[in-house]
Amino acid sequence: MKNYTITVNGNVYDVTVEEGAGGATVAAPAAPKAAAPAAAPAPKPASAGAGSIKVEAGAAGKVFKIEANVGQNVKKGDTVVVVEAMKMEIPVVAPEDGTVASIDVNVGDAVEAGTVLATLN
Image (cartoon, rainbow, N blue to C red; front, side, top):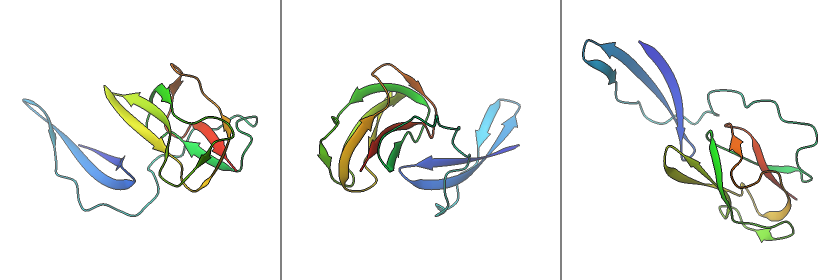
């Protein structure tokens, strides 16, 4: 039996997976927790970004599309970058209102959860 913490759309779930004779069985997740993501993000390079507000990948995947440009004003919830993971397009949104200070990835780049994709001022 293994325990995992999974974040979906900002909601954190604890999930228990049991191995049975016929394969893996997943126990139903409990109610969402209001905690931070399970694992600490990978260390970021000191040179990443020019702004003080970080826009970070929520899941590992590949950069599929860059929706915003440096200098563009964005509002909280606006899509900045789209990451593709497991054949799904996952929008990574601005955590608050601001101006895009840097785009730190290119289309096609592989990213890990917690990687800084862009920064805002």
